[in-house]
Image (cartoon, rainbow, N blue to C red):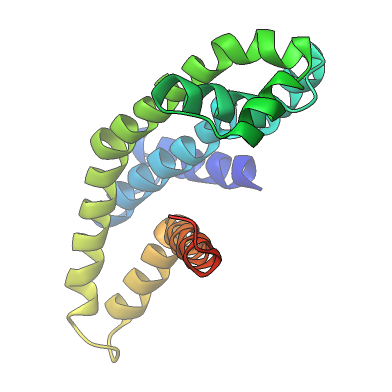
Length: 185
């Protein structure tokens, strides 16, 4: 679905850029922003360290059984201490998981840092500009077409990211609550 939407958006921009469609300036700018956001969303799937489809291909191609857990334990051991149960779990890991985990943990760590930079440098400015544009139309009130148009656009553009953020915060809060109720700090 994303590729079809991207093709439609790019077609709109191409029509504007070639002069075949004389769209109002906000439409052209919105199409450009939407293309950027869609491309960024699709690029996430190529990030192997985020347990995407490519991660599954990597794990299967290398014959790993529990790479994610082994990577997590190796990183924890590199930066702090493992519990006795965690040491035992790591000792019981397959040779393949241990071999791949030795380099994959650093790929994951570098990728995680890269995603934070990517988000701050590339996505936050687009989100801020989009929200600013939407706020102008929303300030006109619900009795105007601009209000509903901008509300629809900002929902379509930023809705998936907002939902992902809300679900992430909710899951993290639930984990903290479970840990506290179990007495684990």
